[in-house]
Image (cartoon, one colour):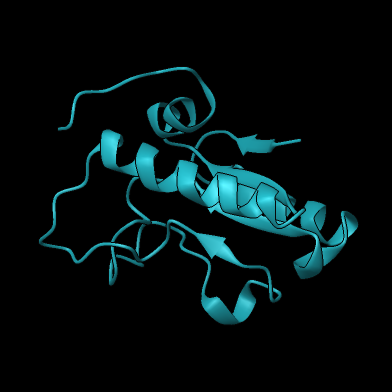
Length: 118
């Protein structure tokens, strides 16, 4: 099972995902994969509504703060890394919760899309 919490900016996705994660068993049962293109960047906290580490309720979050601001992001690279996270989470017997509003990133992770290397 994969759960996706998607929608526009400032629609409450993060709050919903945290409540959902706790209802499903908390950090022992659930991990989050961000599908937000801007939250990939370290230091780009203002304007991205990036959840501070201290507010993540102990739930492991993936695909946040992965890149330096000078590094180039691509949906192909995100797909590769986020799918690795997805496999690791399910292999550990946990439920992945995909959270974000970057539609192409959500589709790249969950749908059968293939991209060139860049």
